Image (cartoon, rainbow, N blue to C red; front, side, top):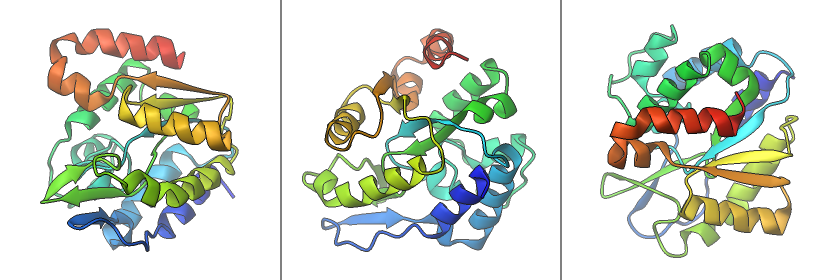
Length: 221
């Protein structure tokens, strides 16, 4: 199987059949036919090989990015720019804006995705009161999700992922939680934290160029 085929099968089988805290809902865009078709086009465009990738882990998909397109940090507008037309609502995601500015600065999508695979600690996203929810925002939720998260990480690693290093998007709670899991399960030799794209775009927007340069140095691309 190619890397793309592994990803697509993984997405097709993603289910979260556990009781969640009151008011917490799971987003599973992979149940939508258009999303499945877009994911197939995207991953076969950039991952139709058997090359090893370095894993970059976000938190969990948001409503306007991976939660609607099925592709982490990629909103419908970015898909259009990649030549993947779609009928999804053309809303931009702040995090996706940064990621694709960074990808362009690294030589473009073809070069970046040849080396990296972007995923998330929880590959399914959550909402509460119609707002994005991080998996660690509700007390007890990380523990409820641990078996799901571990199972998903193990499957992704089985595709021939680089186990020397993993990059974590987020230097706070996300990094703390993945470090804790890594200490227990030994997924990677090293986990390197990077400032989260949303934090950069929301609180440090004037320094975007500086953060992109920092990403390039740390990612060695």
